[in-house]
Length: 186
Image (cartoon, rainbow, N blue to C red; front, side):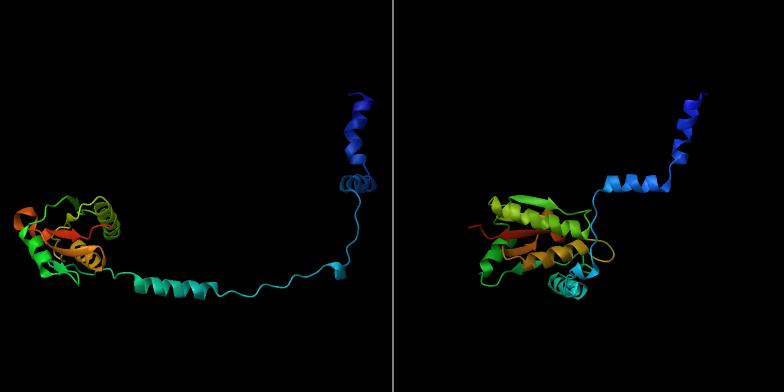
């Protein structure tokens, strides 16, 4: 190795701390001192009770939410309902099969939450497309009864667009299905 190469190899080791400081100051540029009293302190924000607000919203949501059925309706129970303000003849005509079932949906093998969402979407779709008599197949359930049947009954009773519903005729599903009569969309 030549002498010049040896000198280059030693250069970083031979730099003085003063040289490092000079290079640092050159890279940083001009610096001015800030006095402690010159720094304005921002006022701290007022505390927000976010957790207690969230707890209150959760309580209100749970009060508004329909209770999850722990046990279902008995498989052989006949479901029947007529909305207040309607004449009984609407229900009688539905029971006699005087309305043509325009569409149907089968909720078998769906979990409770998914079935509730599917039912809600189906009711909206049917009403929007003037399919005012529909059939919902929920099944008869097992040893605990039909949880889906109980959910369907509970949801249909709460829906404002439902005029009446009644368990389907024996040859159309019997107590494992329900025929629903909907209000026309305006």
